[in-house]
Length: 460
Ligand code: GLN
Image 1 (cartoon, protein in one colour):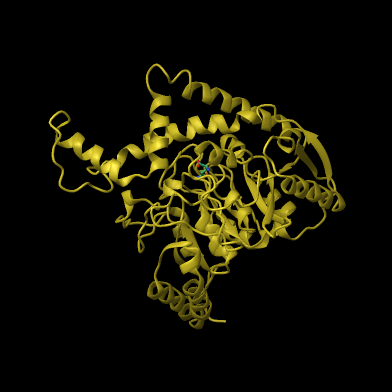
Image 2 (cartoon, helix red, strand yellow):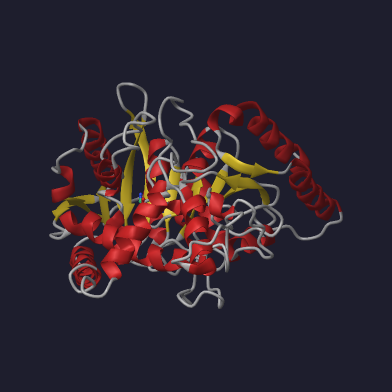
């Protein structure tokens, strides 16, 4: 099969189904076909090809691409055309993957349903009356709908794993620092991480291999060796592996029966494969969501201060100067009022409050201390077990519109995913069957820092 044939098939599938799904904010047929033709030319010239030669990959629209817009699904950046590629995009191109387009997301990656995009909602391919999860909803839906075999998402509090779970595909949040954040538009810098989504663990392993590794342009990038993720696929014997089940998460209020049962069934499968299941406690897990929702908005309020219509981003037109504020502040206020959507504004206000003098000790600084306790819980658990098994989200995909006006309900989607971000550890979401109404179910595996290969090994 030629790269042109593969890329044509992907583009045709997008043309056929994306009017309904809306997984993409941008595609460019000529550009993708030209990239594919170049790969075919290299192949016929006998030039060496990268490990992802001809594979069409979608990239979440929060990652900079030099030849396509990068909008963060926000009006604020609707005209932004980065002059450079993100580190991970460079690496995909170096592996000869074809960047097929930019995938839709919650604005600035804030959300759990992809209903916060300025460019329209994304629908779940399994049931188009339902959400695909978020914030990387487009990246999950385009894989689930068979438009591309793999995509890149980002995960600050669950945004790769939760949409992967809702769409019945596989997604991994790597260890913090494992994958470069250079050219990733920041949401919460101490939590953000780029990772792959694909149909199966076998599909994400080579993508993970292509994007992992040190990048001197990201000061938090790790120098550790990456090793081989595809090797981890080979062994099927789990004898000796100890897997912890989190006592608290399995009995938490709001978790649906189908989700709990699916995790219990997965535990049986692991036992049949030779693993041992042990109940463990992460005593501070009830503080994951409150801690995350102080730290993430705090960092966001700081990161997003640059979009003011003067330095970066959308600039309001015809600014009639407010005499009290002066022309510059009026520009800032109007541009931000017009450019940002409601959820982004909510986060900026929460973060600004939590960081403000007089409140920082009660909120932001306290959250940092709790984050330390959460990390210690994981250290203690991983001194007993090799992996942790649990749910990804409390429910399968819910109906469009169900939670969009209720931020607290939306934040509770992150009950099981934010811990890994706060602790910086890698975690995998993978399909584990369907509920009675045919909606995908999923399980989550979490591993100690830098043990992505262990996740791939056990997941496969
Ligand atoms: N749902 C979470 C939030 O809204 C996680 C988002 C993410 O991981 N980018 O903040």
